[in-house]
Image (cartoon, rainbow, N blue to C red; front, side):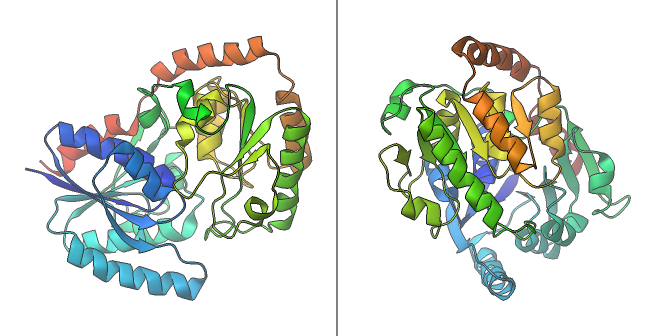
Length: 353
């Protein structure tokens, strides 16, 4: 039996690989899942019912990151027994283990802008699976020519867990929310290695958006990335909701939100694919965001914060019938897209034959 090892570092990876590992297990593959303690990663895997081992944690600072990765390498080697292929995003620790043991590393990426992990991981990949939205040249600069199979699919990663999603208003009511009565705000990942922009302007912008949403009659569901988030600690009013450490299912709350504003790409993109207006203020180009917008989903990627504020203000004024139009169109468009699992099927046949 073919054994696949999934190593997970973030909540987005937990959603993608959690769904993927369960599906591949149903198809007869042996799977082992490891995950790092970070943000909502562990709650996401628990909510999916996936079996996994928690190994390592997130670290801040260059020296601390190196020390934590060194410890995690040893722990993984002791915990993960023999496997045939590693499936992971750009991940220096797991990539080095797979390469050192002579095993295949199948990489997934939608973030070629994340330079440090890409440079340290993708040269070791047997294959890289990525959206057709991303130019091949963006991945080719990281891999070894004629050594790595590059495989694209017509879609984005989020299609994998959205295509069969079911929604129930009882879930959001657990948080005291009603459909379309709230706005989700997710701050930027300012401690990430690729995030090279000052965060004071963004911090002030997030506060202004919270105030705008509440003044417009909406509640705010705030999803912090870090336990030391000052906004989560200091913004104490009834209309401002911060989930417990166990987190929420972002997909379920995004579906019923009036809008989703994110400092990254995944949550805003996920919302738009469900027909909920999504705004990303990530300070750089994201090829997958551009694609999703061009396909007709309600996604805005704005790097100018003044422009973003005006756009969000206008979105919050949209009439109900326009929101319903977005929902209906998104359902149809989503059915036409491929998921990364479609590409993985072909890669597994080519690499493990």
